[in-house]
Amino acid sequence: MPAQIIDGTRIAQEIRKEVGEQAEELKRTKGITPGLAFILVGENPASQTYVRMKGKACQELGFYSVTETMPGEISEEALLEKIKEFNREPKIHGILVQLPLPKLIREQKVIEAIDPSKDVDGFHPYNVGRLVTGHETLKPCTPAGIQELLLRSGNDPSGKHIVVVGRSNIVGKPVANILLQKKAGANAVVTVAHTGAGDISRFTKTADIVIAAMGKPGFLTGEMLKSGAVVIDVGTNRVNDPSAKNGYRIVGDVDFASASKVAKAITPVPGGVGPMTIAMLLKNTLEAAKNLAS
Ligand code: GUN
Image 1 (spheres, rainbow, N blue to C red):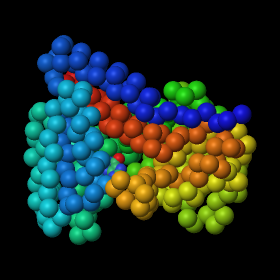
Image 2 (image 1 turned 90 degrees about the horizontal axis):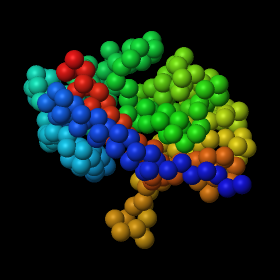
Image 3 (image 1 turned 180 degrees about the horizontal axis):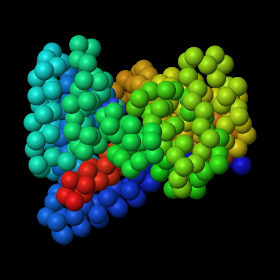
Image 4 (image 1 turned 30 degrees about the vertical axis):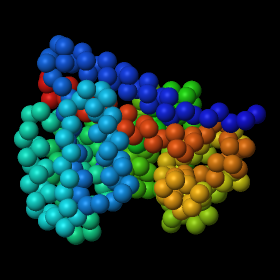
């Protein structure tokens, strides 16, 4: 049987509609419009695209948003000062500093400067700590989106063995922590495999659900999967393609052709995890606005 294609675009649209309705209600009952500030440092083309798309999504839902663009040579001090300004600004409920940052700026210092109640990325150690200890918090957007994709496509992770490949602070570690929670919609047995593991397939072959987040185009093939596994592809790799309009195309970390022959369900790239990140950012911003209002 062909694999179920998990339609992230449709599921993200469903969430955006729900968030839009709740934002309307917040406006009507409390007079509050969710507000999000983006900080974009330097000229990384992928980061520029992501911030543009996120800003557009805010506009569509009637959120207030501002984008602060800063040159790549900006000092760390100037960036920290800008964050402090947004921390104080009552119209702003969420602050997103697009990563990666230029090498001379210490990323962790920047993340820690954001008021944890406005940390819609869920990267601040306060929010990371709350997540790890099983408390309500703002959760990182891509990992939270993966959980929603699983649940809304009928692939509840509860009791399943999940192998996450990749241990980044943005995806691997937080998705493992979210799915490990002793809660409905999570409650999975989680293994985190990574570059230190040697042959990754000895882990992925045992998985009911594989989350590929290692940033290596087409790395995970059908041979590395158990028959009937659910495959979530987090990869967004730009590879050169002279036949494409802009000279490149986006491919995932999964070799879709071989994996989709073995998997029960699989996310495509594009149109899988990607749209979920933006939907969850809107959800987190609404959440932050509600929290700050109460
Ligand atoms: N760069 C890649 N993914 C993300 C993300 O989720 N948030 C931020 N701030 N930067 C990113």
